[in-house]
Length: 270
Ligand SMILES: C[S@@+](CC[C@H](N)C(=O)[O-])C[C@H]1O[C@@H](n2cnc3c(N)ncnc32)[C@H](O)[C@@H]1O
Image (cartoon, rainbow, N blue to C red; front, side, top):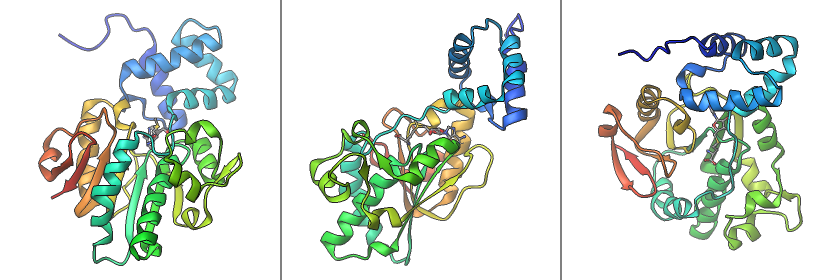
């Protein structure tokens, strides 16, 4: 048996072209997912074959922007899955502040428009101010492939829907009172953003905590396994890894972590 389709429908030629011309590594993503996203753009441009869609890309470079937008799914929220952030707050943050290193490095990988790294920085700030710790030890890095999302992250101005999971107390502490909502300057000052491709670039290290949620789910299993190894290498001993609620840590890298909260997908690097 082979995975090669009996009939070549032009999908591979098109995805190779996208990778060659725009550096988006289609081959590492789940094929079903990539096909679905391309099909959305094909319908929008009323073309019926992958080959014809390739011609549209040649004629209209703006279509590439729309396609890359469709391929990188940028949905996010502040405190998305609030139970996960409650577990991070209760179980990980005290352990981070107990560390001896002067800086505390937190990396939100695949941060989309910045809500996740800002949420982390808010929890770190609240702990520091209530427990008499130094918030200026904290360095949060948000990275993503998608430049448009990163530009929103840098602007740090948000509208109501993305705040709907934010606990009232944190909302009052860290956002301006009227829309569009701006983030408290002390929190903003500790969060930096950078474009970074998880599949092609070296990882920033060493990290105390890596939060990578709802990103690896789009990658095939081999790519996920390789990423877990790289996360393990980028973390300091006793550093933490946080995955998305529907994501599972598997493969040889699993042995390098101990679960802290299995339900919320919190792990400690051994
Ligand atoms: C669904 S969002 C997740 C946002 C946030 N982590 C959360 O859980 O709310 C997925 C993000 O992964 C990014 N992404 C996809 N492939 C990537 C890659 N190879 N390197 C870095 N980021 C990637 C997308 O651009 C998108 O912003």
